[in-house]
Image (cartoon, rainbow, N blue to C red):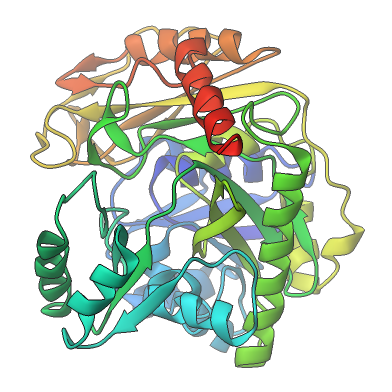
Length: 437
């Protein structure tokens, strides 16, 4: 019987845990979490609770159990080098080493790779380690995006016109970033529609998941501050209503070029997930960023319709035989909506209970930033519970997800418009207007 260690405690990991234990190989699951996610705990044979910085304890836990391999869910333990530690004691990992995880942990590393290896789809950019020359480059670009070089929980990117208005404000933010980060990336602002492509890789070939569109803004109508993601949707044809097959092909090509560049740069095969954030512009598909793990919430969309056996997929990835695995997903639409604490993301309430009550039977739910205690499930200040609807049509999936999230009670809110026909049509109209420019 296969023994698998899952590192992570979010809704993404709850979904991954479900896919692992429902595998036809009937593996035994163990979990290392920094907070007690009751959904993961229920699916696991044994759990350990501790910080992701305690690599020695993660190693001790894994070796004591004799696990066959580990799946690393979130970016935080990847950034600390958990894969390096586990691989040194002979435990294979679905997830990149600390060096390869720079794909996500260093915006400058990834942008410099696009330049060095002529990877398509990169916007104009420069990397600055001091404020010298920044203001001149801001003026040269006109409209800009500013990115902190390092992990920032999905909140380190500032877009002109959304998060700041003038170039002087952008310059102030650059100096703020440099006070706590080694460098800052300044890029041209791209106008278009965004989408996510998550791809498993053994470093040689790619296993692509259906594309998904995430919703970063906190409030209905794409208003408010950026979040880790309030929800997402995918469509039954595995495209999105505003994109073409050629758009998808372009994103796949960029992912393949980056996979190849990572090997050329480091001499090490990247084994894990490459999750690309892309945007369709009037001049084609551009690369916003890469992440070194599955998306959250996007993992819930694609894994809920994945027909390929998840453990078989992981084992093929680790053995270098990913090309032998059949890529199979149901032709169904999905919508994920998050219940989040009031005040999220800027001033969320914490240590408040969330009650799920009677969740409709057709709806799946996944615990995220919660902590199971003797007297209930408490929110810890970030996204709390994800609800996923799966149906033949996008509208039906949206209704299911809405019914699910509305069944939760507590000091919470959610975005009602994710997956609705009106919001999707706005995306289509926006993309049509850009293509006609």
